[in-house]
Length: 638
Image (cartoon, rainbow, N blue to C red; front, side, top):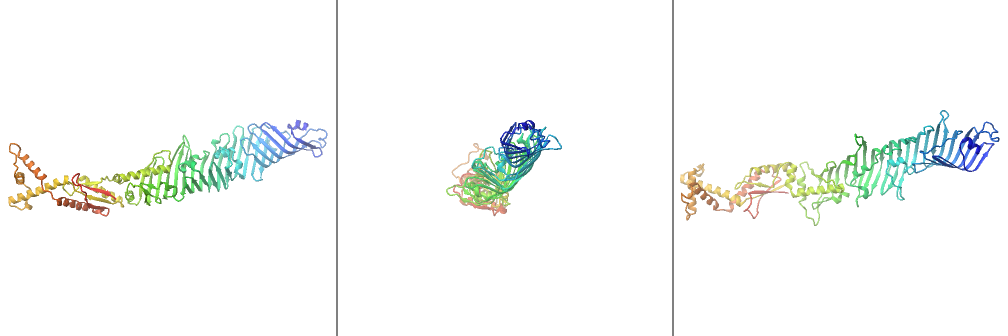
C-alpha cells in the first residue's frame, strides 16, 4: 500500500485491504478519500495493479498502470469551486457501481447506477465522463472534462425524473418562486424529461441549454394548488453565476390553478406580474383558474393565451392576451402590457349574466338586477369602461326606496339599436376592481335618475329643458321652446322606448293681461265699426286719434263717477295710457277664457308633435294654482 501511495499519489485509507499477488488485484472496504473540493466513500474498492513482469508483485516492482478499477456503493460530494483533485498518473479508467453524487448548490443528491471516468487516449489531459441511473430516477450524463482548463462540457438527459428531485436546484428556483422550504402540507409532484447541454468552469459557473417537458403533476404551496397535464420548457438558457439573466419559453396545457382569497387580489390581472422574469414567453392552453371569493369563487375555464417579453430601449415590457369562459357568467377577453411597476390592461366581458360571484353587485338604485345580461369593457390606462345591458331583469328590493322607475332608466339608456350603454370612470384606489366598477356604475345610474333631462341632452347631443314656454295669452311657444320641442322629438327618435307626458298649462298672472288686451281690442274694433257705419270685418286698423278717443269714452262709460284729469295735469297721451291700463286691469274675467287658451295650446302642441305622437302624450293640466309662474307646459319622462 505504501508503494502504491508513492507511485500513484493517492492513499486509500480503509479497512480489510487485501492484495492478491496472483490476480494482482487490490481490494478494500469502507474506503474514504478526502481531497480539496472532493470527498467520497466506497463500501468496496477493487483495482488491478499492472507490472512489467509477472513476478513484479512479489519483488516490489513499480506499478506501471492501474486497470479494472471498480467501486461499489459510493457516496461522492463535490464542491466545483474548490476542486483541485489530481488524477493518479497511472489512472486510465474508473468505474463506480451504484452511488450518490452531491454537488454544492444542489440540495438534492443524485443517485446513479454507473459512473465511468476514462482518460482520452488521443488527447492528454481530457477525461471522458459518463454516468446514468435507471432505477426510478432515470438520467444520464456524458461529457468531457479538460483538466488544464477546468472546463466540463457534456449533455444531460432526463427521462421522467421526479420534479421533487429538482425542487431546490438553482435552475428550478430561477424558474419558479420556491424561496421557502416545503412544509408537511406542501407537495411538488410530476416528472421532467429533458435534453440539455451542460458546461461548467470556475469563471462562468454552470450553464444549461436545451428543452424540457413534463407530464401530469401537482404543486401545493402556501394555500395555492396547481395541477397540470403537460408542460414544455423550450430554449432554456440557465446561467448559474447570474440566474436573473436566465431565459426560457414555457407552455402549459391543462393547468388547474386554485388561489386562496388572501392571495387572489383584485382580478386575474394581478397574477401576470408574478410571472418569473426568466420566463420570456408563456403560453397557456385549455386551462382553469379559480380565485376564492367568499361563498362564490371566480372560476375561469377554457383559458388560452400568451405572455411575451418585448425588449425596449430602457426597460423590457411584457405583453399578454388571454381568453376564458367565466363560469356561469360569460366570455372574457383580457390583454395588456406590463412595464416596470405599471400594468396597463383592458378586458371585455361578453354575453355575461349577473350571477355567481357577481350577485353581490346586483343591487342598483333600489332594484335587484340579478340575472340581467350584459357586456362589460374596461381600460385601466384611462380608468374608463362601459356597461351594455341587453336583457333587463329587475325586481324591487323590499323596504327600499328606488330613486326612479326602472322602466324609465331602461328607456333613457336604450338607444335605437336596442343597446343600453352606461359609460363610467373609476377612481384608482386600493379597493378591488369589481367593487370600484360597481360603485362607478351605481353613481352614474343615480345621476341619470336625478337629472334625466341633463343625461338625455348629453347622450343625444340635443339640448333639452323640462318645460315649454308659451307666448303669454297665446297658444304658440317662444322661439327657444320651439327649438326645445324640436330637440325633444329628435331625442325621442334616438330613444324609441322613452315616452313623454306634456302637462299643458296656463298662467293667470301672465295670460290674463294678454287675454284682456285681446278682448279690449275686439271691443274697440266693434265700437269703431258701429260709429263708422261699417262692418267689423271691413276694419283693418283704427286711426290712432280715434282709438285714443274711444278708449277715453269707454273709460268714462265704465267709471261714471270718475273724471279724466284736467288737461294741465296730464298730457293727452298720459290720460289715454292711464285709461287703457285701468280697463285692462279691470276687464271682466271668465273661466272659459283660460280654458279656451289651454285647449288652444293643447291643439297647437298636438299639431307640432304629430311625428312623435306615439311617444308624446298630452293632457290638460289640472293644477290648483294658476296664479303664479310662467305660461308653461311641463314635460315628464316615463
